[in-house]
Figure (spheres, rainbow, N blue to C red):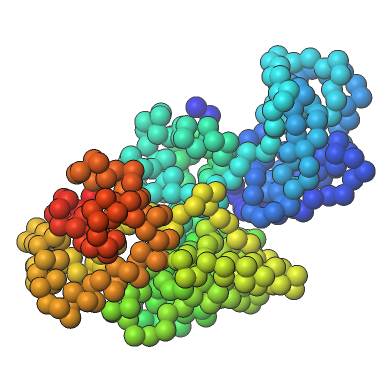
Length: 460
């Protein structure tokens, strides 16, 4: 287990350098910035490379035979700049890339034959929940279990850096989180964000369903500065979630402006990722909800007004009726970049509508027991659903919201059951189950609740 490595400031963004050939290009990169092994990072956007700033060193050549600690021979090098791969050897000494090229005659304590394989910088997981859950919890890197803190599920996929404290949520104080990680050691490199939602709750208490006052915004700004001094590299926001949902653009701009002296980064789970936010239901909300394009426009505005790097996190055009709008979002981002706004977006490497593991098609209002004084006194969700379905008007609203949620989640053929008491349904999508039952998929969603685990929302 190696010691925890901490980035004191956000890794700076470097575009590809133009050199006559790949070897000279990588030598130029090394000479200008240096590379630290396992700190070379993968993506914040196309044709870009993130590296931890290290002191520059003289250019290295591949002309004189050298001895290295590790020699990776014959690999197809992907340098992280978006350029095509090229074949070369990599010599590593004292944990750093010391030479890159055709290192004929070089020797090493360990030689790895990478023929036919691709060799790349370690990937950055720019939106990671690897340290959620708090110190000592199973879902946290802050854990004395060697297996947990080594994070084999992360590093075995090539990710050597994780950016944690996402969606506006972070521990407090950041100094304590950092100290724990440094004390115990951890597998991947870790970059810490400070959560907008966290500082908003600290400044506003439980009275957060409104715009912040100037005094409250100033208090949040002081907390952000404290976090940055303690080691945070930027701010994360969850503007589709509580309590960020009630923030204004001006509030966010004021806080993001605090990042400028630190060269920090703003990463936002935006206010909407489709035609409407996840909290929006046709039966419950009359106002016009924000859309993905509204949210992207806000992120661009924040970047333009502050000059800070901003990221639209896990960008997507969610919902069957909204597919195709991704082209408009991409065009907006590209136009802003052409104008000099430092705006980026990250994306899942797999199809998802977000937070899929807890998808419930039936609206929560139809399952909650509003008369219960505590969770222990609440009647089971299935009981509440049965009661509400007895009223024709209420039943119509429930079915309308289910229809909306099915569309938002990608349609009946993209909603798959992964856990359910009747194991015959596991692995099948909603459309398949409905066909087997010979009923409308909306009725299937209701039946899954009533016939499954009646104490759990959704029945699974």
